[in-house]
Structure formats: structure tokens, C-alpha cells
Length: 247
Length: 305
Image 1 (cartoon, rainbow over the protein chains, first blue to last red):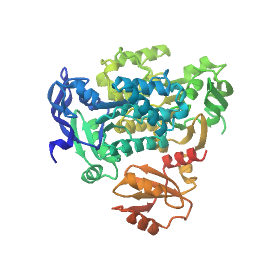
Image 2: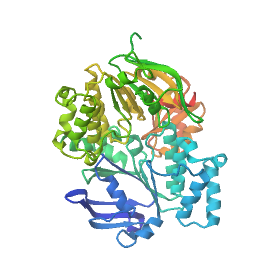
Image 3: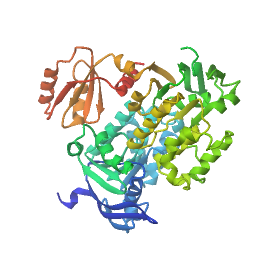
Image 4: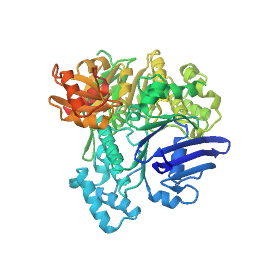
């Protein structure tokens, strides 16, 4: 594998808050087009790392490249090439479906013409054409989730970061949401995703498990299950993360 | 059910055009661990607000320990421990200050009821001088539970205590609940995590303000109407699509590394399915009969409601 196949390269990333080491010498690569799962217990350092990868915070030390751009000197280019969606914040409740799409597309610098055509095809694909002028607060949770994901990739980013995208969603919507993730990956968008649902870890091409600021494991789900003699990813996670809790 | 700890009769509640609760009725026995299982927007929090006397129901009646939620709200508040979905802690108070605060509100002291929280509190006691805002998610959750228990309530309401909490802390939290149950406290807990249903004595599966089923977890599973198969292949995404169109298949859902395939009883010759998948170019095919879990049942109820 050459370096060109990597969309994210992280070497010896360290992030300290005072004496607390949130990220302790992380080294990993994310390959172009893969679904990369980023797991860890609360407080393991996931959010800190994601904020750095998105260009929202500087590392204390280490080398980080995202979409070919340097995290210290090219943050603006990074932001233009990534999408981001979290469970907590995504859409504006008091704007309509169409206004939200237009707003996000505008922020990402799409032209008026592009916005028109992409908004149209997006609403068609999600079967939201009839809901075009409805306020976000009036549409069901499941629709919101799919719309939030679609606006996060409306500018065709190279990478999309999904921070617990499926929390609290009903089981059918949760699975439909993963279909959208698969489709995005098939279209060549790299997906970087965190989740507390361990069955979703199985849907990732590769999974990282963070424990205590360090990467405790990084591999494909089948290899991890074999290595830790586990029936599923939940067991792998408990075996790795529990050690720390008991210590 | 004689002398239930919680009794809810025909409760409905709307916000504008949205029916948050639609004619809900159920009872919970004293000392029971009763789970409300459903996604965001199912109506779980509205129900807690009504039972905790924070919201007047539009229609219907409810009682807690024989006390009416409208008339006797003052009495109910004294015997109730309530851990709302968003943390109930004061982030700029320390761990022990939060605990003192809640004890004082209920006219008691931490010393007087220390037995009630000893086991849980001992895990966070080393950090008692730390501000609540600086605790990890798992520790905040433990402190919030201590605060809800410090006045020895007869009933405990936990609204999504494990949402956003990692798998390890979730497991520990349920272990705490099971030990709490031994003191005969009635616990009503809500969760969007289907796998937690099996840890309750009885569950109500709810969706869009309606109860789809109330039963023990074992009964929910035994009443599943279909035959269920677990099917594996190297390419799970393509597998789902190929199974979707296979004759006689009622539903196909991804479950981690496998697909769960539901069909009419005795309708699936496994060897033919294997041949079909092999023809479609699937590798490492695995097919086996399985028992449904609560999530399978929940989705079946959603589809056929």
C-alpha cells in the first residue's frame, strides 16, 4: 500500500490538557473509501482526536494530514474537504427542510445553481419532496437523521466524520441509516464513525478501540474477534475497555 | 395486579398536533424492575414527566404508590427518586456538595441514609472534592443515581440513564440496578438500547406514543411469529440486498456481522438458500436457525403495527 491510498495519516499525535494526556502518541492511517470505526469508552479521547482531525483544535505534538492537507498550516482546506455530523447538533429546527439544505450548501460554498440541483436530487433520493417546506421540528426523527447525513456530504467531501450518528434512533431507522453510510462509501467518501452500538462496529471495514488515550487495537472486525477470542465486537470491546475500569 | 406500585390508566398527551402518548395503560408491581424500551420520540420522557407530577396529563389517570399524580403531587414528590435524561447535577458544585444539596432538599442528611448509596458512592468517593462538571460520563451517572437515592425513595424513575454511555459503563449501571432491586424499590427505567430489555423483569415496547407490547422479555421473544435465520457472507451489504429479493422472505435486517432473515415457519430450505447465495458469488456463507432477540421482536412489531 502506498501513501496515496491513505486519506488520513496520523503520526505520534499527542494532545495534553495541562497534565492530562488525552491523546497519547496515536499513530494510524485511514484508507481512502473505507468505513473506519472509532470506538472507546467515555473519556478515552475520541472526541479530542476528532476535533483535531476536523481542524478545530491543534495537537500538542505529532504529524497529522487529512485529505492531503497539513493540520497545522492548511486547516481551511481541510474544512472544505470534510463533512461532519453529530447526534447532538445537525439541523436547524426552525428552518424548513429546503432552507436547511440551502444553508449548509451555501456554507460549503456551492453556487446557487449547484444548490438548486443538489437540493432537488437529495430530496428526491430521501423521498422528502413533499416535506420540502416543513419545519425540521415537525418531521419525524428518522427523517431528520437521514437529512442531517445527506447535508453533511452535500459538498462531496473526501471524508465525513460521524460522531454517534445513530444514538436514540429506532432499530429500523438505524439500519436504513447504515445503508446511507454504505452508499456514501461506495461513492468514494471515506467514513470516520464513532458509535456506542457494538453491532455497528461490525459494519466497519476497520475498527480502532481507544483506551485511556491510546490505541488499544486497530484491525478488521473478524481479525479482532479472532485475536481476542470473542464471539462479537461487544465482547472485544468489553475485554479491552474493562481492563482499565477495573484497574 | 393487586395494590400496584404504579398504575396508569388511559393516559393521552399531545404537544400541538403531535400525540406524544396515545391511550397508555399499564401497572407496575412493588419491587419490580420495569423497562420502557423505545427510540427517541416514542413518548418515554412525557410519561416520566406525568408520573413525576411535572406535567398534567390531558386525558387519563395515574397513581404512584396509591397517590394520584394530580391531587397528591406533593406527597408523591417526597417518595420519588427521579433521574432525568439530562443530568440533574449542578456542574459547578463538587461531588459531595451535590449530594448534600439533594439530601437537604428532602430534609435528610447524607449520614442518615448513607447505607442506601454506600455501594455506588464508594466508587466515586475518591473524587468527592471534584466538580461534577469535571467527572467522566460514567461517574456523572453514578453521582446522579446517588442523588436520586439519597432520600430513600420507594420508587425510582430513570429516564434513559445509559444514553450516550459506553458499553462498559452501561453494563456496570445495570449491575447496580440489579443490586438495588434487592432492597425492594420499584424501578421504572427507559432506554433506547434494545439489548437492555432482557435485564428487566417486564418491559413495555413503545413507539410513536403507543405501547406495542407489555410482557416479560422471555414472553416477548417466545411470541415472535416468524422463523428466524442468521445468514453470513463476506460481503454483508450485498448479502442484505440479495436476501431481500429471495422468495418467501418477510424481512431482512443487518445484525452486526450477520443478517437476520425472517420467514414463515418451515418455509426456508437452507440448502437451496445456500445454493442461491453461492450462485450470487457469495463467499464464506453461513446459515443457521436462531432465536430472536428483543430487537428482532421490536422491528417485527414496528412493521406490523
